[in-house]
Length: 286
Image (cartoon, rainbow, N blue to C red; front, side, top):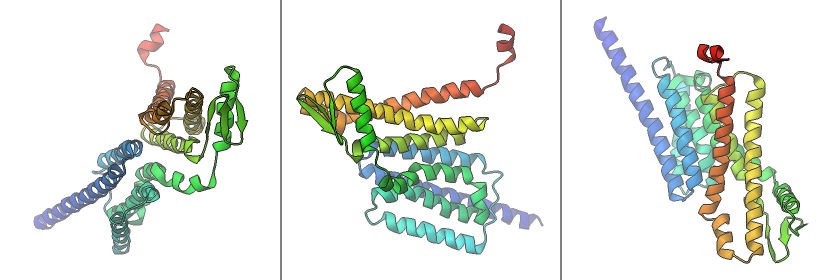
């Protein structure tokens, strides 16, 4: 009996080691591929999402039920093999957006069988919102016109002599054309993913909070990007092409992304404070 228990414990430890090794390998491959594409913002976001999902898996490592069936294990291995093969053949940005979620599905099947979808739903949700919504919704939605109208409205209220020609925000001596890449949709997907990550890692009480946090995240990204378009139009009107390039595709665009994340972080902190019950000391001071 002692030998049987010993070998069962050893087998469990070995399976745990291989599961962690597979997860670490998939994460490293994904991050390396993004690094070679020089997509700094998506690299930082992916690292945050991977670490969050990994921490949830690590926290439940003692309670996890490794009861995968042969069919589920075979299917999980097949999914991971497909991910590895696709990753070795010049993966597209769309594939890099969905591959973490696909990898998580395969890993869950190997770890806990089909019940792994229920056991690891938080991790699957996090990696789903890393890139899947953007890949499938991006071709269907174009908010360039809305963004151009919003930027024009800001300039008009500020007293500028501005006009709107479809997607072109025009000032007397120059202007900008708002296309799909400048519409702010990508940043809205990123902040939507962060809002879901926040709700998974810091669950709040009340359905309205679960609804308003993603809505506010999307609105913050849209408004901040609108002011970026305003700045680009002003610089174009001032005939400063180098400054336009800096704030359009250079490090300046990352600054606006950081502003969006910082504003959303402040809002999340406020929501956490609202959700935290007052301590006895706070009650007495009142």
